[in-house]
Length: 375
Image (cartoon, rainbow, N blue to C red; front, side, top):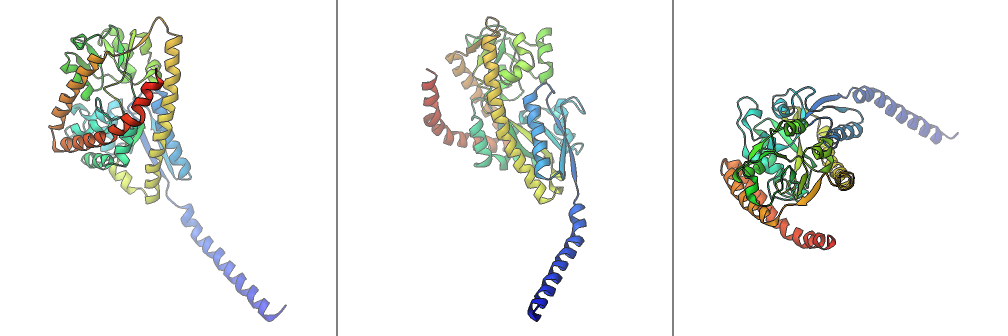
């Protein structure tokens, strides 16, 4: 071999040895990367496979995309804590993450010690006659919805992220027909304590907040006369089709319901930057998975109601005059809630402005189309 070739081989061999040595030195650092274990509690029973499935999907996506470095153990409501305790638990660092609906937290009994409810939380889930699921997602990511949500939850030591949309919803199950707004008078209705519940109260009814797993029993005991939960799939999982005959739509009270993930702020900020981004993107991914899952499951369940339960269940539209009256009462409720705190006023203004912006496009792009294809 020539002298030059020998020198090249010696140099190349030396360089490769240096690389190998560096890899050996660095290997322990790679292997020793800390693994993160979080616990999540949800606000729902295991029977609600759609919502629990979303929580499980987040855990799966996080573990897969982090190469096993980040694992989240998911517990349904009632397993390690009661359904409505998860918000306070995450705020107090008892768990690292929860999944629920933000309008649950406008209630003093569910607040962490030393905190009072913030009515602004309702807009981050849904409000009566508000935006649909697509509009809500646009407000979070293209408007200032997520920024305002983070600002609101910072006071509770939490970082919020949209989970899946559970919308559009149905108006609920009723044992008696609804023909006029007066038919709500004296009605005990299971509904979230958000603005929808306040509208029922304005109409002369009583709003009763009952966890999903207890709605059937509440019907049987006569505690409630009517109930709303979500839509055909989840409602049938709870057996609500066996409690009342009349199933009304549209879900005017929750047109764009978006569930939430809430991270303990200290735990979130302690994550390495790449795992923080992994968690954020995983939440956005399951929003899509969950929405599509909900869409097909409700379509199948509605078909079952109309065939298997024909003669036992009637799927009916609310009369237009009733919807008009409900919309008027909803505007009053929104105004009253928005005036309670500066944050609620700010969030309501942002939400209303964004809804006006996208609403005109929704009407042109989809409203007329859906009316036509339904004929």
